[in-house]
Image (cartoon, rainbow over all chains, first blue to last red):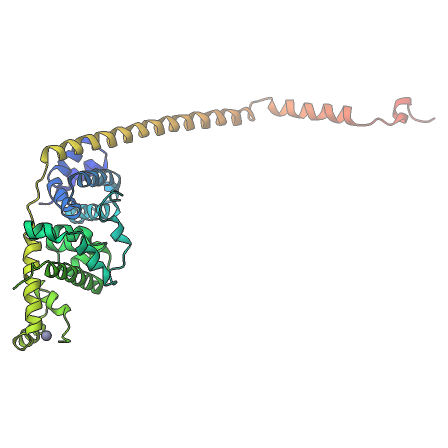
Length: 189
Length: 138
Ligand SMILES: [Zn+2]
């Protein structure tokens, strides 16, 4: 499903209707990406607006010989990464932590009161919150791997990271999540 | 404590291992319960990550946001284009006035006036010798 060059040329001419044609078929996928990353509707809408504005400004530099969706997705990924999360957000402080420090897992685990978890036992929600607590680039790697089903190589090219870094990042992110689930007794095999 | 490279377990569930590496790993798993356990945990986590709650897409809101954002972008863009058009007109007018001024230098008579001016200046500016005033000595 790639958009016609004709529409893109009209967008380059800054023709108002052309942007509706161009974006309407992609905004669902874009929103999914933003929401998977932020897990928050308001933040996702903020990022979506940023994506629209960036598309408007950058469309001139779009190379028509290349597919449109990866270009657009890259804009969305960058907008997500640049998005400043609400200061009041519970997990913002975690961004300052170094992932290699062993106490991080404990900090993340402490966000869940054990009592509450025993009642809810909602693995999905725990994982969701744990992902939110992960700093960058762990969260985006998880989003690209699990929402977009990207290979290591694709993730590396999207985030401008070496292949080895993507590999170790995904590995560490999953280990954090795994150990946390284990601590909450959700990993009994 | 097994010191097998655990990264391979992750690459295995991501389908990023070469066939030979898969063979080596599967051979190791036969004899190592520690790696088997870790792999099983990773598989559960992987399944959970793949099956997170469905995302509800707010289609209407997105369409509204798109429309209002591009309305603004386009209005702003075309307004700035108008301003720069005005600037262009101003530039053209300025340059034609400058050309008109240059043309003044080529007006017939301009040189005459200029020369006349300078000769007058020469005449007035030249300090006359008193001898010239009273005539040659006899
Ligand atoms: Zn082992």
